[in-house]
Length: 349
Ligand code: NAI
Image 1 (tube, protein in one colour):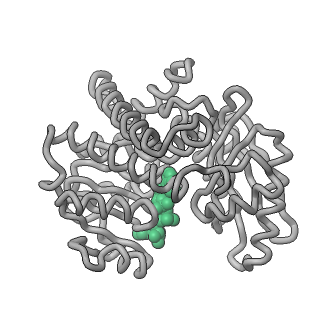
Image 2 (cartoon, rainbow, N blue to C red; image 1 turned 30 degrees about the vertical axis):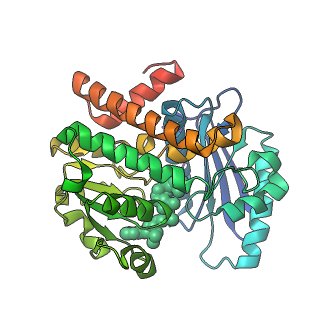
């Protein structure tokens, strides 16, 4: 655990043990900007405390790049609530309130919103004790929270990658494989099929598959076979770490572009994809629509229409710059995206 902290480029890891539920509460602040850092609150059962710490550190770092590329002056951070599997609903609510006090104790240094395992409703509970540091439903001007603008951004990222690889080809001629049909994946699948694309999907939740595929031309495959689907673009929209030494050799696509955070399961993942001639659209560039949209509406007073236009424009522009830098410098796209983000922060590499 300490080794992970030693090799981390971030600033501070705050930790608190919740005795009542046995939860490890972590707030990792990778980089504060103007005294502020922000990122979602993830609630999950981890195999070990080390795995929870590693996740918090990596996710906080990715948030720094995401905010920087999005041109929003907030530093990267992330919270992880590493819970036990037997957490009951009443205890969960009390835990969220105590977590809110933990956030309040950081005195404005950390702001948060929903992430894997937490909902906009949970943010309302956390806000009872954390106050304004939380993007609660009351403060969010966007219908459906960050999910809808995230999906808009993922679609913009998909389009930018398709244009880069195939030219101005319409999506209708393309085949897409989507892993995960939650709020983001289901919206992306519906939008692509509406444009006439062939869409193949999977989810471990049969009900999510049914909701997405019923009455539409979307095709279903078993979750463990999605990597083998011949397609133009694979969109990971479920979990992190899915691009690794086992899965990358199986991919039969030209592009990877999706919503999931920290898709690269190993440091050399981007290079491996590059070696296979697969264009990787870095996750923190593609999935920034939620933060751009929500912060724009909450803090800058944008209309939803303006938010949508900003999400599309910023993500399209960022990906074009990332792909161009990767080509001109002969580096992989992940390295190019990080370099671009650091340049925008003003400290290069
Ligand atoms: P979600 O939690 O609503 O949906 C995830 C879906 O993936 C669920 O339907 C789940 O059953 C499925 N899934 C889990 N394991 C799977 C597996 N092994 N194979 C296939 N399907 C599996 O999440 P949401 O909001 O749709 O987000 C998707 C991803 O994008 C998540 O990784 C999230 O962290 C990330 N993301 C989401 C943002 C948002 O605003 N919603 C913003 C930035 C990133």
